[in-house]
Image (cartoon, rainbow, N blue to C red; front, side, top):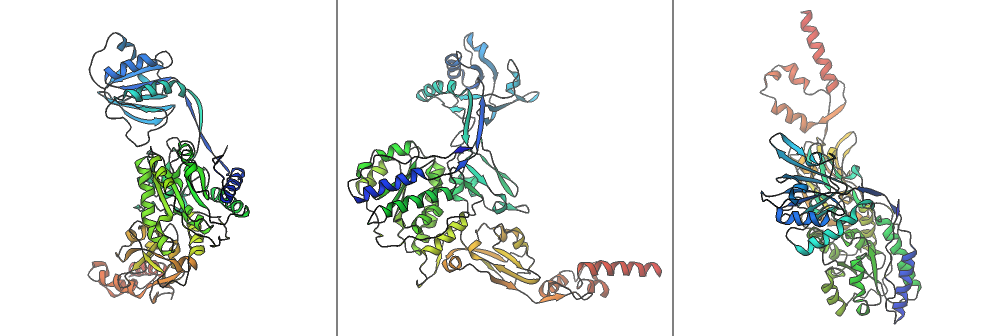
Length: 558
């Protein structure tokens, strides 16, 4: 296991009581236990696959030949000098998958697909490293796997890659950044696809659909955290550190801030652990002294559950400093969540600009020039548990921040928001309970032995599985935030019917509406033309089978 450490910035200005309080808060944060995380291990030898046009790939092979075993796959038919023969493995464009120490390159040939590694001298199974000099990369994801250097025709990138690749031979460890709970995943159920947020947000291609759930390749995952931020249920969560550990450390820091005599509410600035720290340090002199810089592995992990819990803990503002080189998917995920939660902030009577996304060092510098923060002096911090998963954290934050004296407690939200209700057409619904069978959050449940459909709005993810599963098209989604549903979660009845009792044994087994509809649909069917067959529709499964056997026995005796 790896101990998680993200040391806060040191030697920040402390020209006032707020600066002294900030120093006390950051010292407390440095001592906080952020927990541990699992890790994945890479083992890489010295076999490097170099792909691209001969004019680029051959000089690269020559440059690396002293330190690596270079094997060249030429993208074109160009002829080089005699050196080409000692490196050339094949010509063509292979399909490439894998990661550091385990890249597989498959090339179509007249004899079928060929694993190029088995064509090399020594016939190994995988390539350890890949240098891609082609204009169209073999791996096109935003954030390519470790061990794969994508340089194209960029001479500066090639120079960097030539220096880096020999350093990647050996054994390395990387954190396992995520945790996954398949039991609350809303990706799919019974052959139906629901939520795809994490797949859409992943910059590395590490997340794959596996029917009713997902699978994350820990060797491809590089910890951007967007998947956890956009997951509505918390099924996929960040584990470096877990949110509960981050919030636990944050609570400790906020207490130290207050105990140091600060007379204003603290604000938070989340930044990346390395480049982000340098970006913040460059403008530290201009930042308000009640603004606490918080180092995290990747700011893509700081989502609405973290913001709202921070506000409930007494924080006035949350600023997220995205790095200059942030992947487009990470920026999009953060901006989408901010957009979806803007009406949520307003519903909680919090100004939307209390959460600010700053993209790059120039945006952070501009913020530092005009560092206006909201004045929350006198607002009490909530005292509540930060245990539980993402939905529990959101529910706790809503309960702490909600002011029930508001005139309007229900706020419409945009499609894609993870809160809302389902609307049931009672005339169409037959209470077949297909919706309850697929709901991953148990927001929709049956009424036990009664023909009744129950709903808990605080649990609804708006994933759409219930809507798709309904055979009667009786369900529609309505994204909204109904704060009383979170302040006091309870189930309500969406539909109920008069139960129909079996004419054989008297057991309730369906509804009168369902039996009437089935009888209507089968009225012209040849199997139900006689009275006894029609009466059988009014029996439970056990009595129906018994009646069939009795009818067959009677026919045999006659």
